Length: 205
Ligand SMILES: Cc1cc2nc3c(=O)[nH]c(=O)nc-3n(C[C@H](O)[C@H](O)[C@H](O)COP(=O)(O)O)c2cc1C
Ligand SMILES: Nc1ncnc2c1ncn2[C@@H]1O[C@H](COP(=O)(O)OP(=O)(O)O)[C@@H](O)[C@H]1O
Image 1 (spheres, protein in one colour):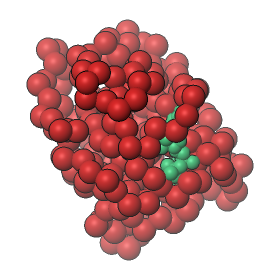
Image 2 (tube, rainbow, N blue to C red; image 1 turned 90 degrees about the horizontal axis):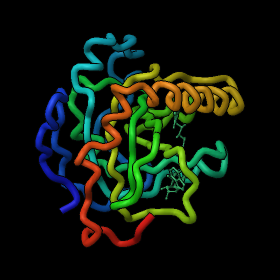
Image 3 (spheres, rainbow, N blue to C red; image 1 turned 180 degrees about the vertical axis):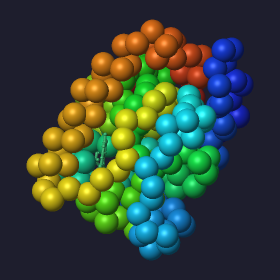
Image 4 (tube, helix red, strand yellow; image 1 turned 60 degrees about the vertical axis):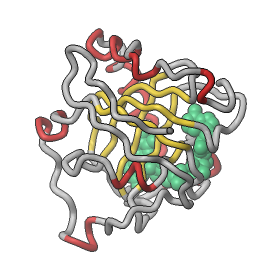
């Protein structure tokens, strides 16, 4: 119900179906181990390899994470369930991306999304966390988050202070805002992927 195979929009490249999305646990668990537990630090992704799967369309129910985004960073990030994270194409690298997002059948906004193990926090489970550049009236846990990832910004990094992490994320947000104004990205805001029937959502946002 919350996920469907997506018809490939005319003129766009890859678009993969999301897996069925259900309630998840804190941290949007994945069975995958962090990179340093497997093969050491991941190499920087090649731009062409990363871009091969973009735009990538995905939707799933918003689940709880560790609650650090709002409290520690002042930047809330909506977490996807583990099924969504586990079903990312294998060669969509971990890292920081940008694109478009909507909640339920609400308006489409600019977003940034972090995919990986949050090295600063040394998470043991891979997560996919989206910050939407919009002020919402209230939290939207349990609602359906729709995302179209359209571009790659940088690899995940460790930082020597919380302030440095916050500053990097703020830089990502500013860069994403600029890049999303390019015509090639603006057209994806109007993609019919975001036309979700109102009857399928719980609350409007
Ligand atoms: C745009 C963006 C960039 C991020 N970059 C990093 C990063 O380089 N290193 C890192 O450890 N975490 C990074 N994060 C993830 C944050 O650490 C994470 O969102 C935060 O821990 C909140 O997690 P929570 O929702 O589970 O509470 C980034 C998040 C966003 C939205
Ligand atoms: N602009 C926004 N972007 C992302 N999430 C938001 C935003 N505004 C409110 N939220 C809410 O905040 C939650 C994320 O807050 P956060 O402190 O990171 O907690 P958690 O670790 O549980 O994800 C989201 O699940 C959503 O319900």
